[in-house]
Image (spheres, one colour):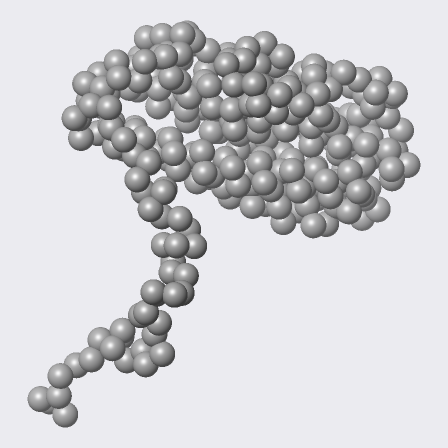
Length: 282
């Protein structure tokens, strides 16, 4: 009827739970009180909140990447490749979120950042242990990076353990061997704490996979998932470098790094080299 008061969608929900005296609420489950009370500006500048939230949100996404990568590596080691595909696809989507976050941070102008940069002290994104763990898991090992974490004994032990564990690429190369493809022993029994070096036998094994897709479909699918992740990680690095250059130019980083120059050098470190070089030979 024309004069009847319109009822809202919430009013029409007769069984909507509204009493949380003894029940767990959305905020309780997600521990929002803890999460949303963790943004403490050290200055009075408006834009410091953006800086904090971007980095905290990125660390949460990185936590999920590590969760997925760890499970994917376990599946690959067990020669159970199919479940890893979903996990690796999810990693790639998360990386897209991280890449997009740089465009939000780029709304911070140089003048605005200078208003609170000195409050950061020696803290720097270079020190992000989760990003370092992701790099380790993807095969970019660097023993010198551990020195940053010596102040925290438990964290240092965790980082050292990750340094000496095979990467997802090492696990994938072993998967090739399990399918009867020949790989040199030096690529299978090496010092996992060292950066991966290209190996001709590994390239030949992957070439066999790409030339016989029907026979090795699961290995082919694994290779393409790795290429996706490697490419996204490079894109994230580039976006990071571009955003830093836009905001601070060529100033040194707050943690003592050379800033943009360091980030540019990081772009030279590629993941899964044979999966890129084989494309020229196909």
